[in-house]
Image (tube, rainbow, N blue to C red; front, side, top):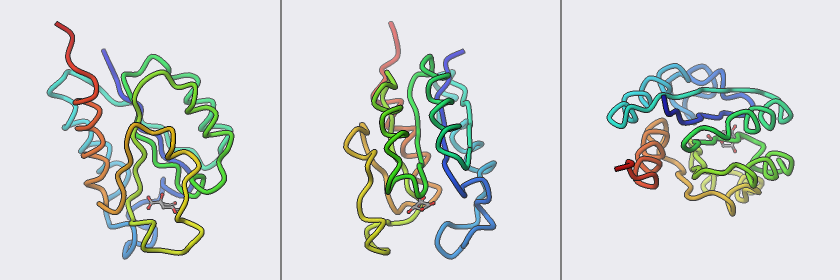
Length: 146
Ligand code: DQA
């Protein structure tokens, strides 16, 4: 079965309990279920990976080249995740960067993402809905075969 990779970086495993006034009350599990629903129409599944360390995120990108596309929330690695950036440069399918919060409305250090220039698209500030929008974008970017 075709799958998309949902990749979440540091501190995103505790969504729902993490600064809910900024990141919302939905958990990663809720988000996974919502994306599953979104891509089910194409018969796609999801592979969800959340890691707090950059090396493990890099490894999972390398292990999932077979997926049809990826949704990536790098968390704070957006700021200085050069290894993550290089791993994504070699990911062969479309991928969308997602940030729950509007990073440009926040501290200056969140205003630049080292991975964004490589992404097929970026969704920012839409909360958990952003992941679903990214899933829809991947469906559009990957037309059905036949
Ligand atoms: C985040 C924004 C980042 O700046 C922050 O470090 C996160 C979450 C977001 O989803 O809004 O961990 O990626």
